Length: 260
Image (cartoon, rainbow, N blue to C red; front, side, top):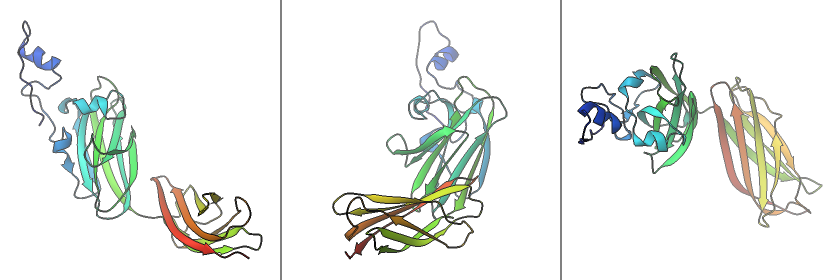
């Protein structure tokens, strides 16, 4: 529960003075997870809960942290990931106001914001890291009930770079495999070579299949100038979206291409 502020204002009743202070009057119901410090730990997912805006106070963080615009009646949750996967939060209401969702890695306001928006938010959870989640009202003076649903889907995107070889024309060929869910609706792989000269060369690949099993992909990278040779940094990035969320995987390695 939030600490109550005791003040005396001449000519005002206790109820009015407390209202001006932005604190719920004595006896008002409050949710247990009304502040960052009292965030409800999510030890088992999926998680579902509902709360009334009348039971959640508006605190200073609501106006300064949550999406950088007026927000009200926040509640808080925290989740420590034990495995990599997509953490998704949905906030819904039938009461005609706009709910919002905020996520940070570590407790705000000092930690990094991972996302902020309407209705839903997701991120790739990393094992051992703790995420703080807030659900709130983005509509001023809203009244009603918010339903909160939190779920974690195990990782579904796996990218591999099996080889980088030199072509006769001085370009380079990437080849590898990608594993992604058959429900994927769109996606791409971006493969990049960065020689020690600093000139980068890359290729976007969309010609691959998502079947739930490792599938081949390949792409040719043209040199920035001359031929690609010598020690190269390899960055390959896969970005795949379905109706649940967008997920990514990254491969970083070093190869050596010999000149012809």
